[in-house]
Length: 89
Image 1 (spheres, helix red, strand yellow):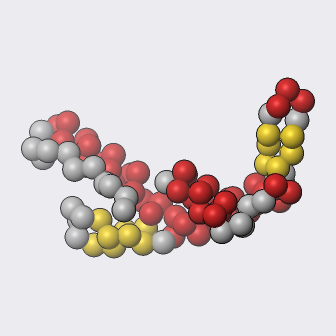
Image 2: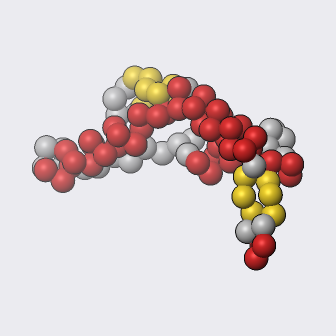
């Protein structure tokens, strides 16, 4: 999810070189403005809904990790025969 968000920000030119600082030793850090931009984009992305194939309903992207963890626990306990991973398309 993070990779997709990062690539979307770059492809849409929402995040630009001015949002980064080059530090000694070659480290690259986000500026304060860049951090705000990324956090706002992440918060917006978490609110978007996607269709979950197993639950057959729309769920917010931000809940996917919790839902998948619960499905994994049910599989490990033996309540469900097979774990079904969520594959983003």
